[in-house]
Length: 173
Image (tube, rainbow, N blue to C red; front, side, top):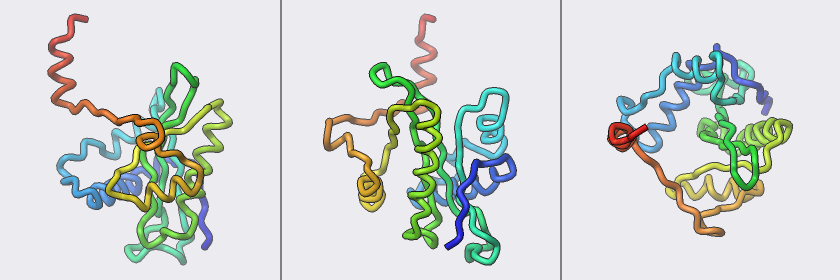
């Protein structure tokens, strides 16, 4: 299958948003709970201070999806910093439309993100994966990823918007 992986451009953002909504459907997240929108993606990715890097997978028109889409996957990452390891890449989302899976497109997206991270001096890449998706865990392990929750006992924590609001209101800064 002919598939090109390239840097995301502002014109791709409506398709990225479409794919984000597909992911939300897979995880049964109501669309009204999504805060992200195309304009926010545009500002965060292509504004004065870009906050993420994104690569997209695109097929030629003759291989378009059943719905007529040619942009069929993406990987969205942010650069972070580890006090032990220095600069890192955090892959926030890796997604390939189900009808295109099993064709090495996901690996091509990950490899492109890894190449960019390596060129920018990163020492490691991190990503969280739902335990409800063992096929995703197996994919990452096949390409060399380590499950830190099993290996090192690391746990992922989140503070939701309401906790942020409450904590900020109590802050003495």
